[in-house]
Amino acid sequence: MKGEQVAVASPGSLLLLDGSPGLGCQVIASLTGCDLALLVTEPGLGALSDLERIHRLLRFFRIKAVVRINRYDLDRSLTGEVERFCLDNSIPVVGKIPFDNIFSEAAITARPAVEIAGVELQRLLENIYDQVLSIVL
Image 1 (cartoon, one colour):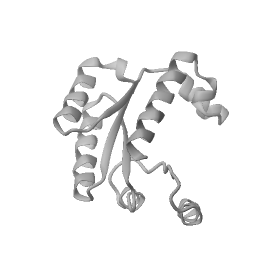
Image 2: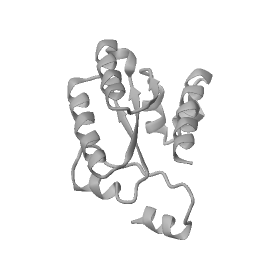
Image 3: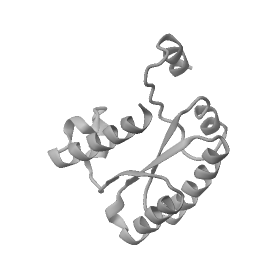
């Protein structure tokens, strides 16, 4: 509810929401009024199946999507399958993030990963941010 209050108080501004994983009612509710969905996935058969399902839901609601692939380097073959699915469905892949313990450290210390990441990872994250903004704005 707080996100909705912020959005109403600042019409026309950019509001980023972190939606629930999966396809349940909370996900559908978080998509209401959404212009773009950043789908975060990883190389795995279950994750690919979930990506296919959320893509069908987004098409139904006519919401554009982009994909970020986390831990892409753990299974490059399945990463390729995710990339093929995205290519076949005209979904831009805005970034691929390698496995890095920095994300666990960020969660444990309640700090943004971009603040404690090395320069290379910072550039990757900033590039993803810039790509998403260029699509939305």
